[in-house]
Picture 1 (cartoon, rainbow, N blue to C red):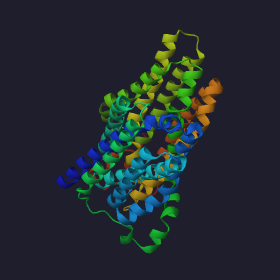
Picture 2 (cartoon, rainbow, N blue to C red; picture 1 turned 90 degrees about the vertical axis):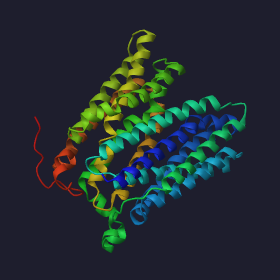
Picture 3 (cartoon, one colour; picture 1 turned 30 degrees about the vertical axis):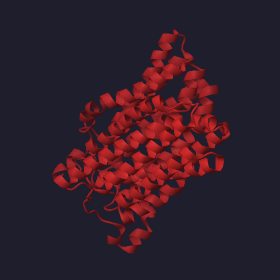
Picture 4 (cartoon, rainbow, N blue to C red; picture 1 turned 135 degrees about the vertical axis):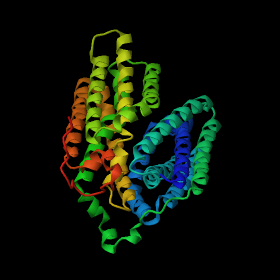
Amino acid sequence: MTRAMGAAMRRIHVGNALSAFGLGFTVPYLYVYVAQVRGLGAVTAGLVLAVFAVAALIVLPFAGRAIVRRGPLPVLLAALVTAALGALSLGLAGNATTVLLSAAALGAGQAVMQPALATMIVDCSTADTRSRAFAMQFFLQNLGLGVGGLIGGHLVDTSRVSSFTLLFAIEAAMFLLLAVVLSTVRMPHSPRIEDAPAQSARGSWKQLLGNRAMVQLSVLGFVLFFACYGQFEAGLSAYGVEAAGISTSALGTALAANTLMIVVAQFAVLKFVERRRRSRVIAAVGLIWAVAWVAAGYAGLGHGSREMATAAFVSTYALFGLGEAMLSPTVAPLVADLAPEGMAGQYNSAFALVKQLALAIGPALGGPMGASLPAPYIVTFLLFSLGITYLALRLGRQLTAVQDRPWVGRSRVVARGGVAAEPVVAEA
């Protein structure tokens, strides 16, 4: 990595931390703000959460093309300004229409940030440094969300609308500050779609769908996000409260255990996964999450004491955090290595779209199921976790040696895109 790339990467990481800090201020309190503080009711609050998902699904297919054609930085700056306007107007909104429009702007801006920042990390890193760069991004995101949520919780007062207006204003300021920081980044040159033949530009989505490894990774990604992230705030919490009798304070402890595990384990885990096949690492995550669901099953369906049930439930979230720490330096770099030259933005946006679909469907199905059908809920997601292991091992057969074992390519050019050009040698 050159000195210029290192300087750019440091600014990108600062930007990641700032954006996560701003989101942490508002995300945990959005439902309460709309439903109770503004007095718009539970239906409107639910619609706001749905608008976030819908806005992301609408803009992400276009975001990938824009990143490829214009570069990630201009797209990111536009997304940050849009998100800042959405956050500020949401803090000032007093009726349902304004709230929903503001949420759409905020959701669209947040959605585009993800693939734009990921593409900037790809452009400012090498095959040797990419896993560590994405691990740092994930670490700072969780740290920023945790710190932002903690500070925001001490600032809000449900009896004062102005306290929530302040929160959204701080979030908007964080987005604008991030825009200022990143506007100083000098991005290294990377190919844009104008550099490629016109046919390549018109057929970019067809080219992506023709990449069997990327399609299989997208299916795997959907299951990953559906079976874990999509259950955190709805299905698993509903199951814990209704079936396991977990108190709200214990639920908060479980969420804190998840964040603490990520913060503590991220770089220790990185040293382990850097020299392991990516497909095997993802397969191991499936097994770890299967154990997590068994622990959750014991918490709600076992016959132990309340203390044992609480400990098992907290362990579930901690085990999910361990799996997340293993995935952060694995999945995002793999998406980048599967992308042909100059197409990282398209591939990152496509994967972000898969993530948003999973996060939209997961809570909608998991919430009611976790609350009313606890045993089928646990069995279903235990099977999904085992399915992650199967899909990951199957994906490994589609990857080249250097895509699955990136350290192999440190002495040669990393193969990007396409299917396996040489057989993958089995490890002992």
